[in-house]
Image (cartoon, rainbow, N blue to C red):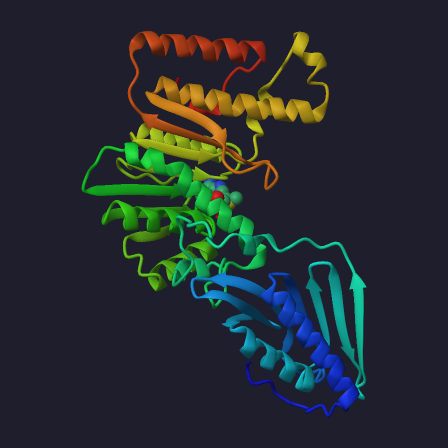
Length: 404
Ligand SMILES: C[S@@+](CC[C@H](N)C(=O)[O-])C[C@H]1O[C@@H](n2cnc3c(N)ncnc32)[C@H](O)[C@@H]1O
């Protein structure tokens, strides 16, 4: 247990001590039977204590079932794992010296121990309908592409805490990063094998996905890689460059610039994830005009086509509802992007990137350069014209960029 400041030692009577012993006995039984869900120690005796609470849960590690303590301080969390015996001692000490409240959830019960300033304890037990903790029924944690242990960038971007554990509020982000790598994996494997790989990430933002891809590529495939992140916010560029240095990512560099005005000769992979509106088109244009082997984008907002649509046929009665018009514009924007990429020799796939329960900006377009014959090209151009005619669209912004 960290050394708390301002300790006040509680002096319990035999009767109060018995209640505390009953509480810890219940904890011990619940833990041994796999019924412990969570215990929180809170309400510090000394108000000036930086520590706010301790959250205690069972955790299955390689070394067996342990007790995980998360010490929540005002500005950081510290995590430690203990054996059951160590935990019981720490909890008893904690109740004697530091905390006035212990709130425990076990299968079927909520058990509360409340201590007042005069060290009078109350043990409250309420029947509740709580199932067995699911995580303990599995003794294997899914191996993820991006490991957490000793992974410096993941900690520096704030996804993991000092103990290399994924922070509760960053779980979705962590899953999203892993999903992204899983989805790109088959595309990376299809790339022509070569010694050197160039990757550009347009609109790299806080760099989550840039770092993840760099690490995955250098760990799994390419020792010789050159990766750039392009971002117009200088503060993010500085932060990301600092993290890259800390993590020892020698061949990853973030540059301040715009997607529209930054060019790289022959990148193998061009990425643009969640770039707003036509910035996605600017990125696709860069990829196509610089002959990227793989273009990966996850469009963000779609304004241009919505404004360009002039529907004067049977569809107009459906599109009078704003939300449907917006969705239709999104479909058309991305569908036309995929077709235009095809015209330039990219075999395209459009799919859901992450589940829509996390975000509605979840479509990914992946284009792999394979070439196209003239007959197919003519056919795709006809398809583009037909779709545009149906929705009264004169031009897609990407067509203008590509001078089609
Ligand atoms: C929504 S964030 C996405 C960041 C990252 N790609 C991701 O998916 O986690 C979009 C980022 O692109 C940057 N950005 C938007 N338009 C840009 C442009 N035209 N040129 C360069 N950066 C741009 C923004 O500053 C922002 O950091």
